[in-house]
Amino acid sequence: MFSLKTTEINAISKNKEYASLILNEKTIMSNVDHPFIIRLTNTYKTKDFLFFLMEYINRMNLREYLKQKERRTLRNLEEAQFLG
Image (cartoon, rainbow, N blue to C red; front, side, top):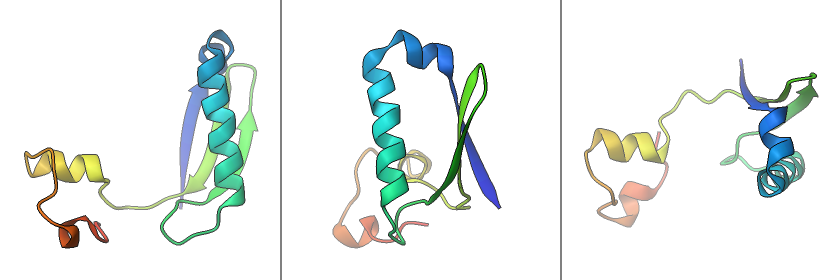
């Protein structure tokens, strides 16, 4: 299974800082191979959109976890380790 991140080319072309962030994201994700980081499989581009095809991880992210717990911080280090 895969996850597809979509970004509008128009949004990237209007904001140089955002364009730089997207390029850095692609570069880092392309070069990193670590079990705690989602792998970038490929990138695609159409006239209107840029796509990042990534491995799919069916787990909760930290923001969702804290929202579910109705808190803004973690209580201890153990709670921060290996969420999901």
